[in-house]
Amino acid sequence: MSAQPIRNPVRILGIDPGLRRTGWGVVEADGNRLSFVGCGSVEPGDDLPLSRRLLAIHEGLAAVLGDFRPAEAAVEQTFVNKDGVATLKLGQARGVAMLAPAMFGISVAEYAPNQVKKTVVGAGHADKNQVLMMLRILLPKAEPKSADAADALAIAITHAHHRQGAALRMRVAGI
Image 1 (cartoon, rainbow, N blue to C red):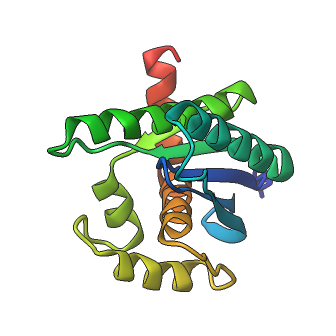
Image 2: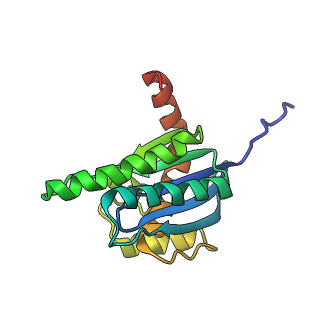
Protein backbone atom coordinates (compact mmCIF):
# COMPACT_ATOMS: atom_id res chain seq x y z
CA MET A 1 0.00 0.00 0.00
CA SER A 2 1.24 3.47 -0.81
CA ALA A 3 0.17 6.64 0.92
CA GLN A 4 -2.06 9.04 -0.97
CA PRO A 5 -0.48 12.43 -1.63
CA ILE A 6 -1.68 15.16 0.68
CA ARG A 7 -3.66 17.77 -1.19
CA ASN A 8 -3.91 21.29 0.02
CA PRO A 9 -6.96 23.33 -0.93
CA VAL A 10 -6.14 26.38 -3.02
CA ARG A 11 -8.06 29.65 -2.88
CA ILE A 12 -8.64 31.25 -6.29
CA LEU A 13 -9.73 34.80 -7.12
CA GLY A 14 -11.55 35.32 -10.42
CA ILE A 15 -11.79 38.87 -11.77
CA ASP A 16 -14.12 40.22 -14.47
CA PRO A 17 -12.65 43.65 -15.24
CA GLY A 18 -14.78 46.66 -16.13
CA LEU A 19 -14.66 50.42 -15.61
CA ARG A 20 -18.19 50.67 -14.20
CA ARG A 21 -18.19 47.39 -12.33
CA THR A 22 -15.29 44.99 -11.78
CA GLY A 23 -16.61 41.67 -10.58
CA TRP A 24 -14.68 39.42 -8.22
CA GLY A 25 -15.31 35.90 -7.02
CA VAL A 26 -13.37 33.64 -4.68
CA VAL A 27 -13.58 29.85 -4.66
CA GLU A 28 -11.60 27.17 -2.93
CA ALA A 29 -10.54 24.13 -4.94
CA ASP A 30 -9.68 20.91 -3.15
CA GLY A 31 -8.93 18.41 -5.88
CA ASN A 32 -12.12 18.33 -7.97
CA ARG A 33 -14.28 19.79 -5.20
CA LEU A 34 -15.14 23.50 -5.35
CA SER A 35 -16.42 25.63 -2.48
CA PHE A 36 -17.83 29.14 -2.63
CA VAL A 37 -15.93 31.66 -0.50
CA GLY A 38 -17.20 35.08 -1.56
CA CYS A 39 -18.11 37.39 -4.45
CA GLY A 40 -19.00 40.97 -5.19
CA SER A 41 -18.00 43.90 -7.32
CA VAL A 42 -15.98 47.08 -7.16
CA GLU A 43 -18.07 49.96 -8.48
CA PRO A 44 -16.29 53.30 -8.97
CA GLY A 45 -18.56 56.30 -9.41
CA ASP A 46 -19.61 57.06 -12.99
CA ASP A 47 -18.76 60.72 -12.43
CA LEU A 48 -15.12 60.01 -11.60
CA PRO A 49 -12.37 60.68 -14.15
CA LEU A 50 -10.69 57.62 -15.63
CA SER A 51 -7.63 57.84 -13.37
CA ARG A 52 -9.81 57.85 -10.23
CA ARG A 53 -11.90 54.94 -11.51
CA LEU A 54 -8.74 52.91 -12.06
CA LEU A 55 -7.53 53.82 -8.57
CA ALA A 56 -10.88 52.77 -7.07
CA ILE A 57 -10.68 49.42 -8.89
CA HIS A 58 -7.17 48.88 -7.57
CA GLU A 59 -8.10 49.80 -4.00
CA GLY A 60 -11.22 47.61 -4.11
CA LEU A 61 -9.32 44.59 -5.42
CA ALA A 62 -6.50 45.18 -2.90
CA ALA A 63 -9.11 45.03 -0.12
CA VAL A 64 -10.51 41.76 -1.53
CA LEU A 65 -6.99 40.32 -1.76
CA GLY A 66 -6.25 41.35 1.82
CA ASP A 67 -9.54 39.97 3.16
CA PHE A 68 -9.64 36.63 1.30
CA ARG A 69 -5.91 35.88 0.79
CA PRO A 70 -6.16 33.91 -2.48
CA ALA A 71 -3.15 31.91 -3.65
CA GLU A 72 -3.93 32.29 -7.36
CA ALA A 73 -5.89 34.65 -9.58
CA ALA A 74 -7.45 34.62 -13.02
CA VAL A 75 -8.73 37.41 -15.26
CA GLU A 76 -10.95 37.31 -18.31
CA GLN A 77 -9.24 38.36 -21.52
CA THR A 78 -10.59 41.42 -23.31
CA PHE A 79 -12.32 40.89 -26.61
CA VAL A 80 -11.88 43.62 -29.20
CA ASN A 81 -15.10 45.29 -30.28
CA LYS A 82 -15.91 47.93 -32.87
CA ASP A 83 -15.38 50.84 -30.48
CA GLY A 84 -11.60 51.16 -30.20
CA VAL A 85 -11.73 53.78 -27.44
CA ALA A 86 -13.96 51.58 -25.27
CA THR A 87 -11.68 48.61 -25.87
CA LEU A 88 -8.63 50.62 -24.79
CA LYS A 89 -10.37 51.82 -21.63
CA LEU A 90 -11.46 48.29 -20.78
CA GLY A 91 -7.84 47.21 -21.35
CA GLN A 92 -6.75 49.73 -18.73
CA ALA A 93 -9.21 48.28 -16.20
CA ARG A 94 -7.92 44.82 -17.10
CA GLY A 95 -4.34 46.01 -16.50
CA VAL A 96 -5.29 47.18 -13.01
CA ALA A 97 -7.09 43.86 -12.42
CA MET A 98 -3.86 42.02 -13.29
CA LEU A 99 -1.63 44.42 -11.37
CA ALA A 100 -3.44 44.14 -8.03
CA PRO A 101 -2.82 40.37 -7.51
CA ALA A 102 0.70 40.69 -8.94
CA MET A 103 1.48 43.29 -6.26
CA PHE A 104 0.51 40.66 -3.67
CA GLY A 105 2.92 38.17 -5.32
CA ILE A 106 0.07 36.15 -6.83
CA SER A 107 0.33 34.69 -10.33
CA VAL A 108 -2.45 35.72 -12.72
CA ALA A 109 -3.82 33.45 -15.45
CA GLU A 110 -5.91 34.69 -18.37
CA TYR A 111 -8.88 33.00 -20.02
CA ALA A 112 -10.89 33.89 -23.11
CA PRO A 113 -14.62 34.49 -22.57
CA ASN A 114 -15.52 31.48 -24.74
CA GLN A 115 -13.20 29.22 -22.72
CA VAL A 116 -14.90 30.34 -19.50
CA LYS A 117 -18.36 29.59 -20.92
CA LYS A 118 -17.25 26.26 -22.35
CA THR A 119 -15.70 25.21 -19.02
CA VAL A 120 -18.69 26.19 -16.89
CA VAL A 121 -21.61 25.44 -19.24
CA GLY A 122 -20.12 23.11 -21.83
CA ALA A 123 -20.74 25.49 -24.74
CA GLY A 124 -18.48 28.38 -25.75
CA HIS A 125 -21.38 30.59 -26.83
CA ALA A 126 -23.56 30.17 -23.75
CA ASP A 127 -25.53 33.17 -22.55
CA LYS A 128 -25.34 34.77 -19.11
CA ASN A 129 -28.46 32.95 -17.87
CA GLN A 130 -26.92 29.57 -18.70
CA VAL A 131 -23.73 30.54 -16.85
CA LEU A 132 -25.75 31.66 -13.82
CA MET A 133 -27.76 28.42 -13.81
CA MET A 134 -24.58 26.31 -13.84
CA LEU A 135 -23.05 28.46 -11.08
CA ARG A 136 -26.04 27.59 -8.89
CA ILE A 137 -25.32 23.90 -9.50
CA LEU A 138 -21.53 24.09 -9.08
CA LEU A 139 -21.58 26.53 -6.14
CA PRO A 140 -24.98 26.19 -4.43
CA LYS A 141 -24.10 28.66 -1.65
CA ALA A 142 -23.16 31.41 -4.11
CA GLU A 143 -25.67 34.20 -4.66
CA PRO A 144 -23.93 36.79 -6.85
CA LYS A 145 -25.69 40.16 -6.76
CA SER A 146 -24.49 41.19 -10.23
CA ALA A 147 -23.69 39.59 -13.57
CA ASP A 148 -20.09 40.75 -13.12
CA ALA A 149 -19.73 38.88 -9.82
CA ALA A 150 -21.23 35.77 -11.47
CA ASP A 151 -18.78 36.08 -14.36
CA ALA A 152 -15.91 36.42 -11.90
CA LEU A 153 -16.96 33.20 -10.15
CA ALA A 154 -17.10 31.49 -13.55
CA ILE A 155 -13.54 32.72 -14.24
CA ALA A 156 -12.37 31.32 -10.88
CA ILE A 157 -14.03 27.97 -11.67
CA THR A 158 -12.35 27.94 -15.07
CA HIS A 159 -8.98 28.49 -13.44
CA ALA A 160 -9.66 25.72 -10.92
CA HIS A 161 -10.23 23.32 -13.84
CA HIS A 162 -7.31 24.51 -15.98
CA ARG A 163 -4.75 25.64 -13.39
CA GLN A 164 -2.32 22.73 -13.87
CA GLY A 165 -2.08 23.48 -17.59
CA ALA A 166 -1.81 27.24 -16.95
CA ALA A 167 1.02 26.70 -14.46
CA LEU A 168 2.87 24.52 -16.95
CA ARG A 169 2.49 27.12 -19.72
CA MET A 170 3.83 29.85 -17.40
CA ARG A 171 6.86 27.72 -16.44
CA VAL A 172 7.61 26.96 -20.09
CA ALA A 173 7.34 30.66 -20.93
CA GLY A 174 9.73 31.46 -18.07
CA ILE A 175 7.23 33.60 -16.15
